[in-house]
Length: 327
Ligand SMILES: COc1cc(O)cc(C/C=C(\C)CC/C=C(\C)CC/C=C(\C)CC/C=C(\C)CC/C=C(\C)CC/C=C(\C)CC/C=C(\C)CC/C=C(\C)CC/C=C(\C)CCC=C(C)C)c1O
Ligand SMILES: C[S@@+](CC[C@H](N)C(=O)[O-])C[C@H]1O[C@@H](n2cnc3c(N)ncnc32)[C@H](O)[C@@H]1O
Image (cartoon, rainbow, N blue to C red; front, side, top):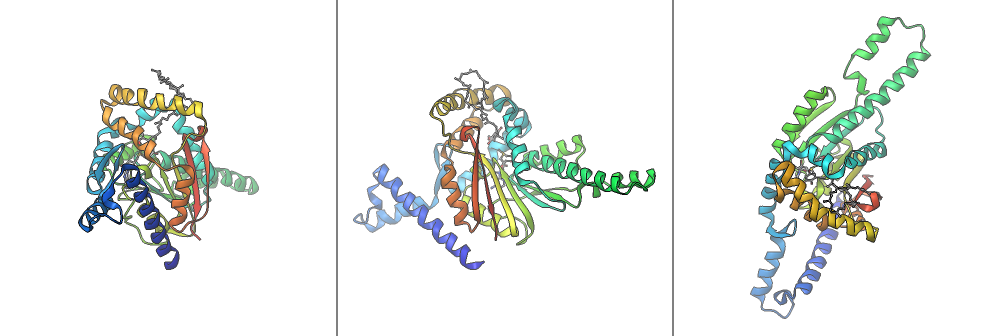
């Protein structure tokens, strides 16, 4: 496994370097040219190494994490209602589709990174429970000699009702996790579910631990996406699957124009009216525009050492689901 990992790192650096060079040429940053004085070249290289984006704003890599934290701390309580309002409920269908695509088998160990208020985890639990119940019904029908007490016992054990499946929700933000835990309590999710505070770039888990890694609307907010992808690869078991639901590039020019209009003119207004927070929703739409296209992101996943990388664009490419395997 060491070879593909170092290769991935090499590829990442190469791509970053060529992108940085292209960016400098576009901006006319002459200090990066080979003929510029050494001090100027070193300074510009140092800048390139530490600068990143927070939406359309250029910030240092150290600053970005804190700014992203503030955004989700601020929106946590209104997060779920905002998503329903902004998307008219469409985000629910995208999340359902992610679970259908995953089609988890009994006993699946899922890690949901940037899991926030638990939307993916709850859907996973519903899915594995209904699969397990269907299986139990088939088995019970086959053993018609069982007594009613025995049948009732089969349905009572909560852990058993998931067929051994488990989901670990990992998120960097305490407030998002707090809302998620409250929701779990209120909706009666207890078994097969755990919440962990952790950074996608440095996951607090051993190697080769999970069958499936999901990240929904999370990776766009991470400072070093390549690092998060390498961590995803590390914690997955060989044969494990990576699934990412994220905003992507719209492929229909008319929808694209309407979507731009809607994003920049409506979403921050909804953010202000519903969550009292224009800035966080301005960041949301800007970060969506900065995220790589379907093909570019596919390349990044391959660079992290994954195989069989595919994607499906949904709603004209407003979002895409990328799938990949650790072999
Ligand atoms: C801080 O960071 C975050 C905070 C969060 O709360 C969430 C996230 C992560 C995000 C999610 C979990 C998903 C949340 C969903 C979205 C951000 C929304 C995605 C957008 C859509 C599904 C809508 C897609 C829109 C289009 C395809 C373009 C069609 C647009 C229109 C028909 C509206 C055009 C708008 C104008 C011309 C501006 C003037 C209009 C008005 C003032 C009226 C307002 C209109 C509406 C509210 C209607 C909105 C219409 C739709 C949603 C139609 C949907 C249609 C289709 C999908 C074909 C996070 O990181
Ligand atoms: C838009 S929310 C997505 C929540 C959930 N997955 C969903 O689909 O509704 C983005 C989440 O990413 C989390 N996040 C941002 N940076 C992170 C990082 N470096 N590591 C882990 N989580 C992070 C935020 O705290 C936030 O909860």
